[in-house]
Length: 369
Image (cartoon, rainbow, N blue to C red; front, side, top):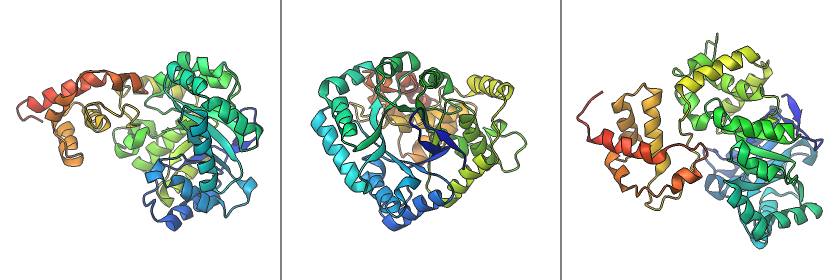
């Protein structure tokens, strides 16, 4: 597995990282831990987790697995989204116990949504508490996780507090994300890219995304490999996190890097043009639009809206996804009060209220394809 230097930390980490948010059977601690160990055997040495992942079991799984390995053979990352100093300290100490380590290699000030949120972390004492914990040796490198665009995240990165940043970046959302990645790279920071497969949209719609995988016989494997290659080709991306749930997925990701040669600038430009024309604006299901004051499961409605793009506007594809997969009706979208909180939180700045209204109208139309 190819390794890259994480910013100026001097630490080498694998170009593919293990995202600990998609264990298929998190309550089966041994089986899940074996998946982590398998990834390590394949050359992956960066393991990302957080409180709350997989029914709040992800850190326990990582601890059970990583405690069996030499400490210098892996880097572990965790997170905290709390605002106050006391809450961050409590969360950090809990993570240390669960992970069975004396220090966390990369500890994130988690999920910074906008500059106002950043100010809350400063004013509440969370950042100060994290810096103090770093001085104590409980944290090796303090980093942040953000969904802000480049012009907003610059406010955070200019503080020169963090060694790196975790950002969502993939072939679907790169128009919104590129400025932030470029800024982090220009400052010499490590960049971990999450959600490289668009929340599963890319492998689930392999035929629709076949243009990503030129000259590849295996359609599903081809688009996955192409999506990972797209991220790995970016000179400022240190590692790309993949949420693994099976050995096959690990093998697939590792194979993509074994065969890796960076995409040429010409091919990247061509892909970007095609993607921007066809797919920009798909919801990746990150869930940061929640909670909804009206208790609407917004990502599920937007997942149905995605089908209108992916299947070229077929009404039935969207409604079937909503009713058969999510057991919801388009009419339920009428519960939206139009408050706009979801759009303020949306990491892609999608027109959520408009899409909910379109979905509701779609449900009222006479039966059609």
